[in-house]
Amino acid sequence: MSDKPLASVSLDVDDLWTYLRTHGDPGWTGRPSYLRTFVPIALELFNELKLPITFFIVGADGERPENAAALGELSAAGHEIGNHSFDHEPWLHLYDREQLERELDRSEAAIHQATGQRPVGFRGPGYSWSPVLLDLLSQRGYLYDASTLPTYLGPLARAYYFRTTHLTKEEAATRSHLFGTFADGLRPSRAYWWRLAEGRRLLEIPVTTFPGFKTPFHLSYLLYLARYSERLALTYLRAAATACRLTGNSLSFLLHPLDLLDRTHAPQLAFFPGMDLDHRRKRALFVAALEVLREQFTLVPVGAHAAALCALDGLPTRQPRPYRPLPRPASVG
Image 1: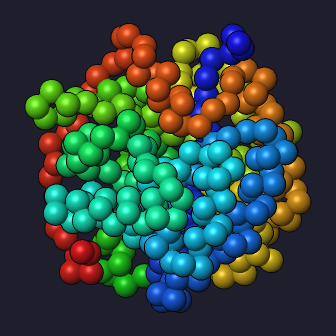
Image 2: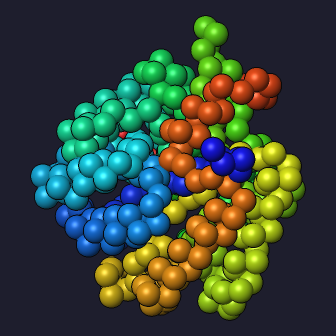
């Protein structure tokens, strides 16, 4: 048995259409997909690394017959399957209870149909969540949520994103909290319990940021640094991992499909940072980053990490802020 602490690895399976939709490209409505290209690439790599992880799947993709084989292969290969919502709208905080119940009903059914797994973990698209959502997850028997990103840089990422889009005013309104606010930097980077109604609780495993500095270090950020220096990117990751271990932070590392794909796989996403990097270079950095984490941690899926954390005494507890719905644009719902 390794004496290294556990750290979890997850990949949000954001399909081509989800990026186009968030970007405001009307071509998303045909739900174009790269899953049949991406899944074999990912499975080959994780098999080579002998590393099971958690894939957070979008329910709408699981519902489409043409995706069934690819998504089913993720589960068959021994990976955990998590829920990444049904429609991948990064404004779940605008949904009322009825809308959220419908979203969870549809996503759970579609994901189970495609993979044979019933998800016990949830990650909101664009790190969106609400107290109502957390309460529903707890009632439905979820083991954990993994939707928070405790960083001060969300508004900067949102500003960059808006400069690359051609959104209507209504579309921009739905995205007004995309990637979070400066206040999200005040949230904990380590795991904790949400205190919910009627004595319920739900484990929160944040996407880990650099302790103290609260800067992200998931792979998309490392790829941005690697455009200037791969050594700098890996040194930064090693420093972040060391800081997590020294401070007792429960590290959870996030991946995305575009961490492995380049613009030859998805030319419609040439605007996205890092898509000009060759996929072979991305793959090499992908492997190097996971090996850096393995120097100090035992890497597991998020569900296994959550089960181990639930067995610990002394995890802090937080109360979600009272839900204050923002004005709902007509396009939402």
